[in-house]
Amino acid sequence: MQNRREESIIVTGGARGIGAEIVKLCSQAGYDVCFTFQQQHDAARRLLELCQTHTGKVVALQADVSDASKRDAVFDAANKLSPLRGLVNNAGITSVIGRFEHVEEATIRHVFEINVMGTMLMSQHAIRYWLQHNQAGNIVNVSSIAAKTGSPNEYVHYAASKAAVESFTVGLAKEVAAQRIRVNAVSPGITRTDIHALSGEPDRATRIARKIPMQRAAEASEIAAAVAWLLSPASSYMTGAIVPVAGGL
Image (cartoon, rainbow, N blue to C red; front, side):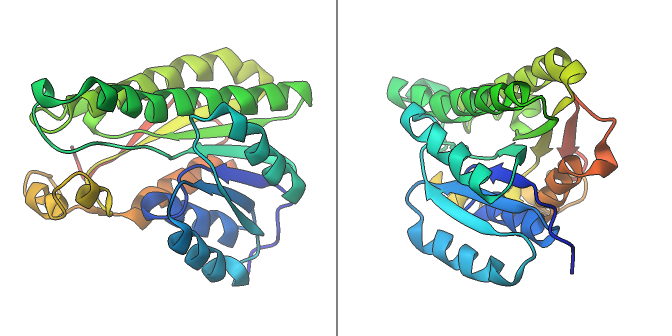
């Protein structure tokens, strides 16, 4: 069993899928973890129960990352566990699959509000905290290979939001590197999670697998492993990197 690190990590959108696997790996590695969720109360409860035997302490907080009124509560909850050392901006949404001309303006705005503004503002809050306390920090943003492919005929607005996250990652990393704050991103390919059902095509991962050089979709745990590595001292000289975990895409 890993020793407790006396350091905390915030994981947004941590109740299910890739986020839940990140929470598990971090708590197993000895980090304390505060994860956020929106409506998935049952999934959050099950994850908390599963992590009870892990080295790190785990707490859950219902919060929308785009809601400024909840941001302080998330950071306060993490700091009550132990000093904040990492932020994983995993919370993200897609929308119903289809051509761009059919997407409603409200949907586009909502995708950017969560995927881009949520990531930026959570990052800003973390950086202000670390600079105020003269502490090192580590941000890992979860992007998507869609930023590279553009996702035509599926959701180009989502792809554009993830491209914004990647550009933000590179620029912010250069801006805060001298203050001992690292900023990287993981770019997952098609991954077996329930996000596809929410987009209206539960079997999307199976359909797209044949287009992937490795001929299969990723498991959420494989994406989480890359995130956990970027949070660890093993990646200490990496910042501003966009790490594709996409089976060769």
